[in-house]
Length: 170
Image (cartoon, rainbow, N blue to C red; front, side):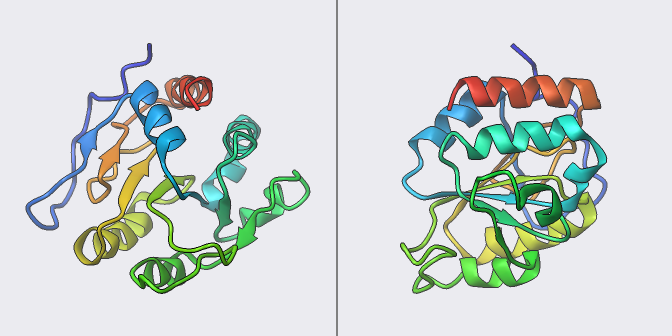
């Protein structure tokens, strides 16, 4: 099992609550038990074809995808039904209990993040953390202190192993 719970060094602090470190098996089980999960994919996945493959594999396990930035270019022809939305707009919509989601089926309960720049995503996560009751799971390569649960800071090859474990447990 890949240990993703170490190296949770933070570079700045926002508030009194920080993300709990999570291992891939637990993250996979939580995602599979969520009633309405949503995976929010950022353009950092475009830096590694293997990361795109892992993201698509998670989506094909039944996790709906919101593509942010230009990540849609890698996902549009993968037959996973990815929908494009700006990550900041999505952060606002997630705070609205009456929002019917990208698919019109109602609000989400668990939001999974992958492929974002740390400094950008942590700001969105701060808003979600402080103004919603949503569970957020950052399966990013870097520790995201404003998520509910997050991997620690990982080397690229360890990150890919961790994503494989998530896929096994979905």
